[in-house]
Amino acid sequence: MCPPLLAILPYAGMAVSAAGSVMGGMMQQSQAKAQAAAYERQAQMARLQGEYQAQRKQEDIDRVTGEQLAGAASAGVSLDGSPSDVIASTASSGALDTAALRWNARIQADDLGYQARIARMNGRNAMIGGIVGAAGGLLGDLGRFGAPSNTGAMGGNGGTVGRASPRRSYGFSFSPSP
Image 1 (cartoon, rainbow, N blue to C red):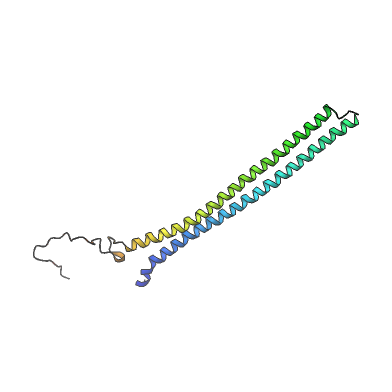
Image 2: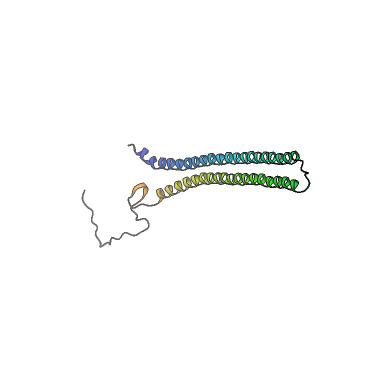
């Protein structure tokens, strides 16, 4: 390989690694947004289903109270007193049932909405984590390139920066012949 190409390979590797970290964060954020949208759709469906069930329940209560009124009238019973109390009790009980159906649907929808918010937060955190991871990786790799190494590669000098040589001088020097 060409020496200039060898010199840029570590930097290219750092760039690819950083891009991979950012892309990973973007992918996780995209998945989290899709999950949040799914939770929001489920919340809307829970609201609609609760309202539908409450309406159906109210229709049943109206039918039952109508039958009670018709039964009392056909029997010639006055609506004063006990028959009126029975019809009122049925209507009151039905109203409580209808309210409970709406309340439960609202609770379920609120829970799904909360899960959607959590999914969006997780997506934002994943994106931030990808960016921070890329920056940290780049800075760490760049720091290693500037630090002295024991191998002498990438500008190091064998790890002897700032230290005196451990050899002693006795007035003569020895140099091996080539």
